[in-house]
Image (tube, rainbow, N blue to C red; front, top):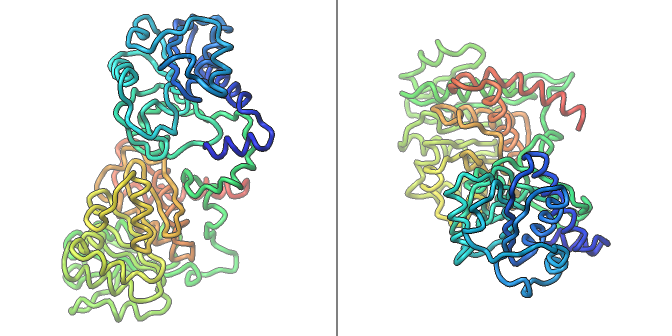
Length: 479
């Protein structure tokens, strides 16, 4: 964002004008959401504080009773912030918890998304007091104390009811806990030309259909089932429901053919339960070689209901042995906990790993924010990594990443991850790029859950996929 500001200024947009537009946007957002009342504006010593002075001036001009507190001395302000502080002709009080005593609303303009060290001193005391009180907060750019790059809290942060940011969202708006602390998020245009993105060249985006819909593998008029791919889901011996969920989701997502490779002892269970999905017995040795010998098989899912065993490890390595696309989930990830390098060395073609937090930590030993850990894991493994959670991160080995935001809490139930793995495989079987396929599947998975609503169980998700696809078809005509 700092680079975007600089590019805008180079293209003729003065910094004082950008700050004026930002502060005015905050004041307008406050006025639209709340009735006029006593408002305290907490200003920091940098540009975020400058935005606060502008907001205070506009709110007072609109008839609000405004009280301004400043961290540090007014004389220490520099640049654009000093300019706008000089335009505020009301009192400026030293920052302290006393500023909150008669406030009906607080505008938090202490620190923006660029904060890089934990908040201390008087600012910490004020934010702690604010977090304890039942006062609605409008945060300027991001709640003070939240790292805009990671979403992590640097010492302390007070939750906001509304956050007003500028030009584009930052990772900290989408990654937890920052995402939950932001409240409602409003992105305002303050005059930065969209062309600056060409110079900034971001590699991290929010996961929306606009990022991958152009590559979605819609069925073609002259196409047939073999052109839409043949996916294999390797079934478990005891937990048969997981592979069935994955296979059904794979078929619903568009794979032309889907087969469950079933252990002999569970073959009848799979064969009886599945209709449009084929079932192929795994030989007594447990080897998949005869099944994978069919050159038409171009995607394999290993892990759902597999169990942590030598056989699961063997199946994962056999699946990775060719040039077909592979999805490894659950036990097929955890089974490499003591020898992750063996897994990484085996990944040569398109591969998507879909770990939740525990599975991720078993094979990856990386540090930093969730975004940074996902990116490091993708580079280390050579696979696309879907680091699951409320703020799922989809990361590619080349440094690209999408942060997903549409997953509702109801997805936290058994079997939903199996459905996601099957959806990824369904898109891979149809030839979609692994990174885009993973991103599309994650978004569709979240949308399917939102459509169904409360009471969701995993087996409800595949039936929602056609409705999601109809929506995407409508959007594809627009995009």
